[in-house]
Length: 231
Image (cartoon, rainbow, N blue to C red; front, side):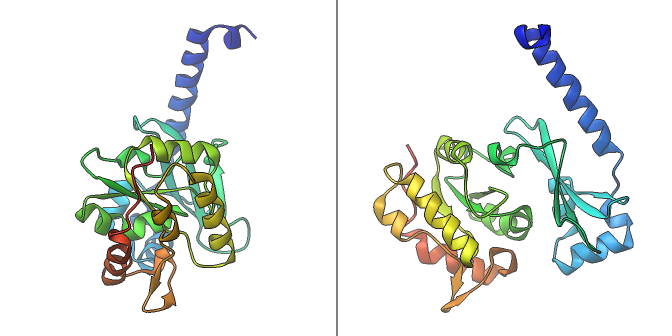
């Protein structure tokens, strides 16, 4: 009760939890040193440089690729694990991570990049971030196929042009429409109509399956309709 009443005590408590969580992460391992994890990453075309750029780890006990989630000041706020074999829960949020309140990838946002692509999950980020960065575009994810109110506020606060690239399946289309409905009045109506669901040559392709040529095709198709800055 006292710590809740005292902001300084609460701040120290938060720091202690952050240090503890970082210590837990330190106990995980390099995925490239484990045959199973390395093989899985190769199957998803995740390069060694992607592993180091995003600080990917491996939880050998539960056989999960671990994606540390850091805030805009690079402070650890959680981690997401993706199970790579066997039965059980596909994704797992470590440290009671409040996914709906955080954007994946926000810690690597750069001011000089004028636009941001919003995708569903961290493997989507791993897939397209290097191509996006090459054309001075950021990438963030909302962890599922719809953005929460808190996430939308963060997207708007980035003060960038926005494109939304959710998968063109039922969940993706539903979440896409909900997200656009929430953004009405905050971005250009034309942009909302032209928001991107990744379609190449008339064929729907999940963001995580795009190659570089397809990525540029999708981006350039909507570039002239790129969103107004959300403010």
